[in-house]
Image 1 (tube, rainbow over the protein chains, first blue to last red):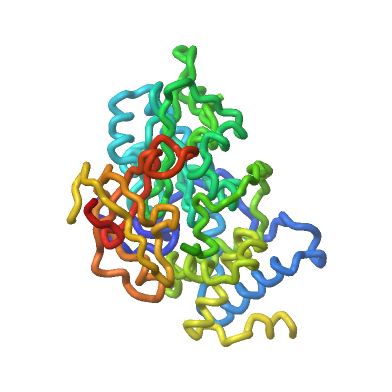
Image 2: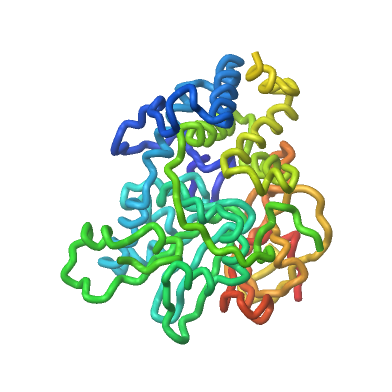
Length: 227
Length: 95
Length: 88
């Protein structure tokens, strides 16, 4: 939506700032078939296309603008979040800046933190493990992690992340040591949360890129530990 | 207190989490992009999108896929605002 | 900004028709202000075409497990608007 610092200016619509600058790793061909052969297209796909056509015809939206937004969305991936994490692991001062203001820290690394006016990174430690949910819909730091996985948006996750988070961690194969405090964050407003997972043991010899490769999307949601 | 259908925190369920994922289909990317374009034009904001989704009948909400909900909301909000005539999209599809 | 970090607050359990971002599972429950996020536009009016002004204080409130239920996290953090909170 809009760009901001902490004294934000709220023109925000939904997740997307039209003025951002992106490094696109690949070209997304708008007509690339993700669904079955044309002709066998599902009713809902047809409906979505018809809506776009209608709105473009009416001059309500510009096709080029829609395509730019598609391009932005497909350019998003957890690699950006992983870079933030890896840098925080090797640079303690950066880590403090990340924990104080994750938006600013992302910008420092040349990353796009997205339109949310506030992004908060929460640190997992020996004492504390965090997990993030949006019980009301699907709020997620997608500029830094890419689109959320289906399960994050699912009704059971949205329900059980607050009623039975330890059960969910069990299902995801995360074993918390005795005495580790479990914290769940429910993203109900404009703040987006990102988990800073613990650096795995015996990684002292690894460079920042190698460390980033260990940071999974799920570890930044809080349902996994890094590889 | 009765809850709206989207208000899922601690909703009674013992369902396990289906961890399968799917790459977003073109129509889903399109729907997402369309909402952002509409937002950029000042025609629909994220709170209206959510409100539209939340106003779906409960069984429809639960049956619909994530971006189906978005599409339903866009149609509802734009019709409300007179950007679309009632039934205009259906008419378009039928023709 | 009525509340400060550390203040104990109770989430209103009033009925509210229409869009709002206070989850049902918290209504009537008490917690403590963990962070003061600042002021933000009101989604309850933006959802109906309003501009969401004036901006209103948004707080991160923490709910301990014994405020919620046995299977809850040790601490549950939720972002809530001032008009949903009262001093507890």
